[in-house]
Image 1 (cartoon, rainbow, N blue to C red):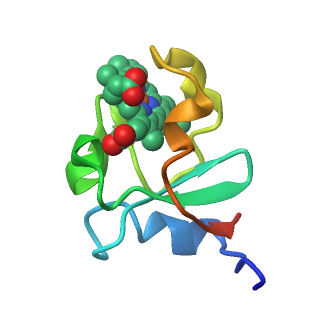
Image 2: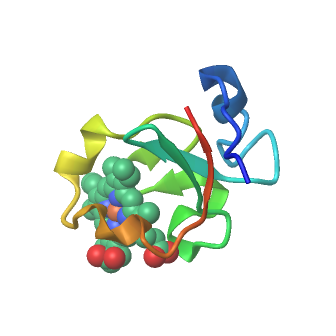
Length: 76
Ligand code: HEM
């Protein structure tokens, strides 16, 4: 099945405030982190969902391995 493509404005609505889903983009892929306790209300430490956070990963104490357990819901 083909993975849907979303625009930045569609992604922005999944920021944990405007719609029930919470999404984060990383390296062109959009991950659904709605089920994560660590992304409640769209906030993760000083980072916010609904955006492309590729550049921000270097601020994290972890690698991109954290995305492995999340479903890719689309591409950006
Ligand atoms: C100040 C920056 C950050 C801090 C202190 C931080 C801290 C953490 C910690 C402690 C965990 C759980 C332990 C672990 O899996 O290593 C975690 C998980 C995670 N982080 Fe970060 N992080 C930061 C930035 C980011 C950024 C920028 C992203 C996205 C590009 C991100 C995405 C994730 C994801 C997807 C998880 C997995 C959540 C889960 O398993 O429920 N983090 N982070």
